Length: 216
Image (tube, rainbow, N blue to C red; front, side, top):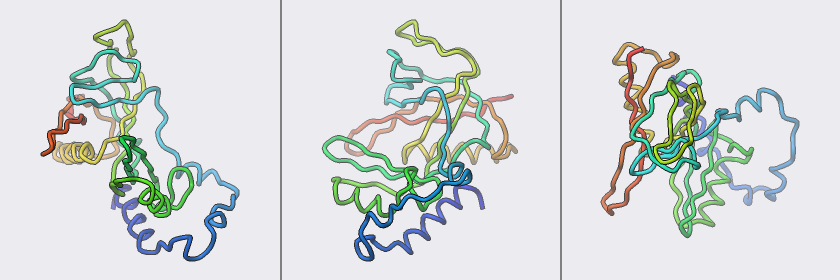
């Protein structure tokens, strides 16, 4: 059983055992501060990076400051640093809210995950999830220049990427490709991140990342 399986199993158990706070006690009573431990902080921490990769239907942006778009970038990924998460996406009036959990039980802000989902369901038009995803820290192998400005990101810049529901499928394909190539999920690997456009039956377009394993 891998780390993502553990998170999913915790989420399923939490869902099965969840009782609405309103049915038992006032909500504030479930938020009494407790003394945190270093283990608590470790379990509720994500990745630490310099910038986050943004996916667009037409290409990739390494940060919001970029003016242009990239077709692909070459990075190094330490697979042992990839963090499994459970994520929920809520939409209302064109605005999107994300809630995530590192253990399948509590949100990253310390709330009960399913209490948070209940609140989102009451205040948003559509709620997707909980669904599995990952936080992926990557390191640029070479310097990358913005094609439409003087902005440059130096080699070894640390970037982060959290796939959407459809983007996570691409990461799952990559994990299978790693195993097929005789690699393990705790190795450091060189990868080309490709911009990939997705379209649904309503002709809505969005971008994800496709992962290509490179030779060391």
